[in-house]
Amino acid sequence: MQELGRLDDLPLAYRESLGAQNLVPLWPSLRAVLPPGTPSRRTKPVMWSYEALRPLLMQAGELTPIEKAERRVLVLANPGHGLEKMQASAAMYLGMQLLLPGEWAPSHKHTPNAVRMIVEGEGAYTTVDGEKCPMSRGDLILTPTGLWHEHGHDGKDPVVWLDVLDLPLVYYTETSYAVEGKEQAVIGTCLERSYARGVVPSPVFSRGSSRQYPMLRYPWADARAALLSLAETQPAIEAVQVAYVNPENGGDCQNILGFSALMLRPGETLNLPARSPAMVFHLIEGGAEVAVEDQSFTLSPADTCCAPGYTPVTLKNRSASEPAFIFVADESPLHKKLGVYEVRA
Ligand code: GTQ
Figure 1 (cartoon, rainbow, N blue to C red):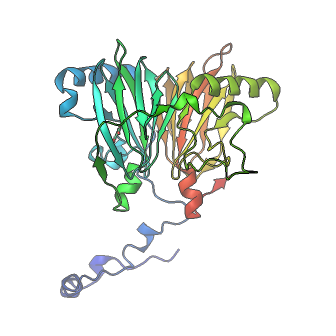
Figure 2 (figure 1 turned 180 degrees about the horizontal axis):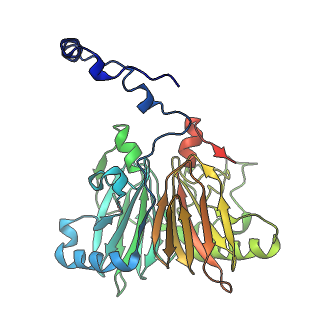
Figure 3 (figure 1 turned 180 degrees about the vertical axis):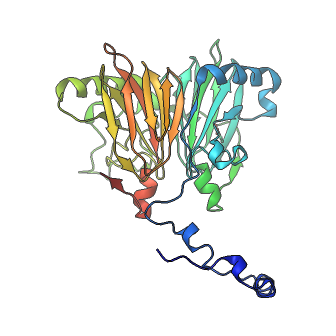
């Protein structure tokens, strides 16, 4: 590959004249912005141990009252991007949010999409556009772009959940903002519109439901049962994995990030090919090992790690007798919409 001219090959006076006109020569930076073959990635493989972060999160509960935080969150930041950027990857933001009994995180809506994966505690709920969604371990609750949401807690113990947002991407595109609102009037619970077992509003005599986000809560009990049944009824399947989809059209449940749950059968090792999207793994149950680049992470329940794109990942169940269950978030809907999605065999 041809070596290109460097910035300091150019006379200083010329460089100054360019700068004075807000002009920049491309060739000294061409290889950096269009690297050969594979993108450069700031995203590093990183793991966040729940055991290590939990006491710090509980300490935040003592140090900062909810009124002074609005959202009491410790951000899982990837040092590859710089901690202050609060990014797990180019498009993904991760945060562990704590709500104590009786606390309330007030209603707002914003342009980034969010999901919550419940990590521990019972009795909290998120109200999304008037629908009250109870939170239990492993449940996935959507708060898509533009929908009002607030969090409350009627239980006795601290509740913690993992927030996954596309905030870095939305912020980068200069489209990130929030609007504060009043406490929502609860018009129902999301339990009232269940899409379980393959029946949806019929599009034959009506246009189905007019909701863009027909399902806001994906109970863990249902996803777990689906994984177990998939493993049992399709033993030859490569990966025991279910996607969280819009049940009315089968598409991704949100616009930018994709979400799935994966079961590693006892003793299973799963080799994931290099794909363009970065990925996040959060262990719900069991024990797993995640190998990516030169790193190997040992995940216990509630541990979270991330992997950059364009690199293979190996997932290993640490138990020979019990399944392991992993929540996966990735950037594939975004990459597909951008036309840059790739799988490298
Ligand atoms: O719960 O609405 O982690 O607005 C970051 C921004 C959580 C939330 C975050 C948010 C929220």
